[in-house]
Image (cartoon, rainbow, N blue to C red):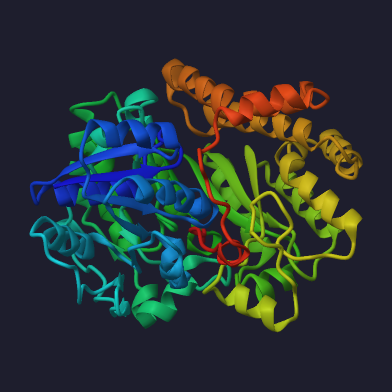
Amino acid sequence: MNILFVVEQIDIEHLGSMLLAAIIRQQGHYVEVSAATWPSVKRALARKKFSLIGYSAPTIHYAKYWQINQIVKKQENIFSIFGGAHPTFAPEIIGDPGVDCLCRGEGEEALVELTQCLAAGQRPNKIKNLWIRADSGVEKNPVRPLIEDLDSLPFPARDLFPQGETFTKGKMHVMTSRGCPYQCSYCSHAAYAGLYGPAAHRVRRRSAGNVIAEIAAARQTARVRLVMFEDDLFTSDRHWLNEFCDHYARDVALPFFCYVRADTLTKEVITQLKAAGCVSVSLGVETVNSQARETVLGRHLDTERIRQAADLIKKCGMRLETTNIIGIPGTALEDDFSTMDFNRSLGADYASVKMLMPYPGTPLRRWMEQAGYSLSMPLSGDRLAFVSQDKKYKHCVENLRWLFGIGATGAWLGRCVRGAAPVAGLSAAYRLIFLLWEGYTAYFRLYPTGARGFWWGLKKYWGRMVMPVTRKIFFQNRPEILFAVEQSKTLPEMSAPSQQLKDKTCCSRGRS
C-alpha cells in the first residue's frame, strides 16, 4: 500500500513523520512525503496511486492541511488521517468535511493497525487512539497505554527528507525521551494528563546505547556536524545522564545542543555536559514577573535560580539560548521590556521569544476562559492571544515579538527597541530585522555547522522568509505585484474554513 504524508516546511526534518514512516515500512508499505502546497501534492498524486494520506497537524498548520485535503478528497478516493497535537486536543475536527479519521496521542501502533485494515480492504474499526467517521456516526475509540519500551521503535527514516537538515547542514535532530515531570499550564504535556492521567508526567527514556546507535547509523549516510537533542528536558534524570554522557563522549564526540531547566542544573551537571561535547543549551526564562510565572504559567521557579543557572552555563563556556513569553494576561508592557532587559543581564547569546498561546486542553486555556478573557481567533504566534481594549499595548507587544531578541543584546539596542515598538506600520521591517538576527545567531553562535550549514541556512532564510518580507516592504504601494506573487502560491478551488473551524485551532509542543 502507498502512503503519502503532507508536511509544512519540507526542508526541515519532522521526527514524528520519519518515525511513523520507518514503522509502516516494516510492514512492507511504501511511504512518500510531500510539501504542503497543492502543486507538490498534485505531482505526488500523479506519480503514484495512494491509499492513505496523513497530516501531522499542529495548530498553526491545521487549516492549511484541511484545505489541501478538501481538494484531494474531491479528486481522489483516498483515506485521510489527521494526527498530532491539534487532533489530540480538538478531536471535534472529525466533523470537518473530508476528515475520515484522527489519531489522539501516540500514533505508532494505531497507524500499523490502520494500514493493515486498509491494505486488506477492510473498514477500519475498534482501533484504539483513533476516532473514525462512519455512516452511522463517529466511532470514538479510547487511547491505548503509552509505549514504555522506546528502544523497541525503529530509528526515524531520515531518507524521507533528503533536503532535511541532516543531509544539507549536518544538523541531526534526535529525541531520547517522551514525557515531562513538570506541569506548566501552557504546555501540551499538561494537556496530556487529561488523556493519559498521571502516566503523562512520567519521563520514558531510550537507553543510552540505543541513542548512540541511531547517531552512528545516521553518520554512515550523512556528514553529521551537530546533534540537536529535542527533548523538552534533557537533564531530568541524573542517572541516565551520567551513563549517556560517558557513552557519547567516547563513541560520538560531536558537539551537541539540548534543552535544560534551571532547577535541574548544578555545577556538576553543567561540567558533565560540557565534557561530553555540549556547546549550547536552551534555558527557560519566560518572564521576570514572578506572580505571572507562578500563577498563570505554572512555572515554580525563582528568578534568582534562573540567574544562577545562566551564570553556570556562561562560566563553563557554553552558548546560552533563552526562551521567553510575552503578552501574558495580567502583565503590563513594562513587564515584557523588563524580561528583555533581564535576558541581557544573563548574557544570553540569543533571547528567543513567543507570544503566549492558550491552547485548548491546557490549564492555561481553561484559566483564561474562566477569567473571562476573549481569545483572538484564530490563534496566531504573531498576535496577542486575547482581545485587549488597550490598542497601544496590543500593537507594542506584537512589534516586540520581532524586536525582543536584538533588544536583549545591549543597553543601547534595548533603549532603541523601547522607542521603536510603539511605531505603527513597520512590522514587516521589524520582522526582517528579526529574521536576520535569528539567522546570524543560529549559524554563528548557537548551532555551529560550518560553512555548509551557513550557506544552506542562508538559502532557506532568503527563499522562504526574507524575500516575502522584503517584497512587502518594497512593494507595499504596488499591490498588483504582491498579488501576482502570492496568487502563484495559492491553492486552487480552496474553500475557506468556517469560523467554527478557525475557532478550533489549538496545540503545539511547549518547552519546560
